[in-house]
Image (tube, rainbow, N blue to C red):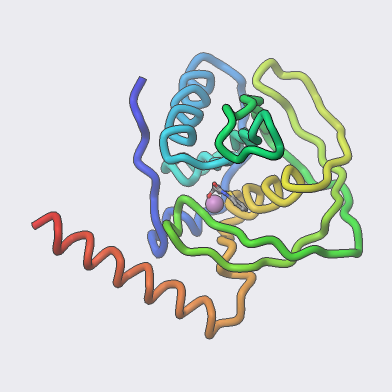
Length: 182
Ligand code: GNR
Ligand code: NI
């Protein structure tokens, strides 16, 4: 199965508002499989369909936490999760900081504040409905991915000064990458 191209900022694709998934069919299952392959290869812990050029309300996630919490290099526990048409039903008033990255903003990291506790509903790849309270990295990652469905990137949560700094560094890194390639 092929790896998919990940769109990077400032590509206008990432500003598309994703539309609901209408049917869980074979075409969607192939896309989901390709998205997991692309996410694991990157590597990342989440991927929204719009990041691979498909502006639908679909995202995949696997936190891949180390099997031994005291050993970062122990084999990751694979727990693939699929979120179709997810909705955040409610969130805590309290927010926590977390240093985020994004496969569409490669190698750039910045602290973002988000509610630390959410209740979300979604459908999985079998069409089963879920309604769960989430916290920790799972809640942070789902909010990051759901931002993508609205055309929002984590850098949009930063001040304009910080956002422009990240975009400049991204452009510079891309120029240097290009200079090596040619
Ligand atoms: O791989 C990813 N890591 C990450 C770290 C902190 C907060 C969010 C994320 S999601 C990111 C993959 C990605 O870009 N998903 O859209
Ligand atoms: Ni992202």
